[in-house]
Amino acid sequence: MKIDINKKYRTSDAKWPVTIVSVNGPYPGFPVVGYAHSSSVPLLSHWTEDGGYPANTHLNLIEVREPREFWINIYPGNGTALHPTFESAEAGKNGGFASVETIRVREIIG
Image (cartoon, rainbow, N blue to C red; front, side):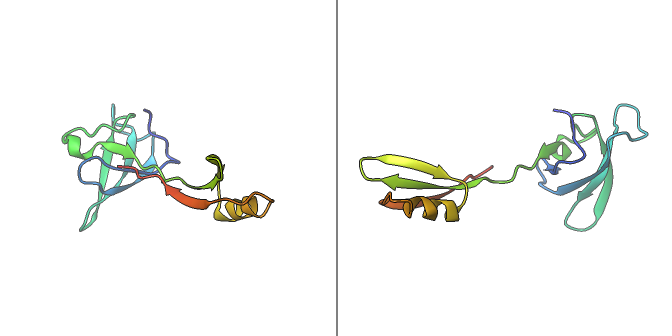
């Protein structure tokens, strides 16, 4: 994985949020520069282009993915339909198809 300045990252073990400020930094072999936001102060740090930290692996970068959320309408006879929003799930119920239940699904990312 190559670090992308437009994505969100955190440290692997410490789980500190990281703000990437450059992927073209001045340190040979460690072009990624950013701030690891510890519990006390932001730490200016540098990483390899794939997010490796030079001294401690617990500060390696991991991309933070936003959890996905969607709704499933369940219809008589075990039919289902996926919907990106609650409103579209409700509209699906009002389109002449009476659903038995609408279930909200939220992805859990560890």
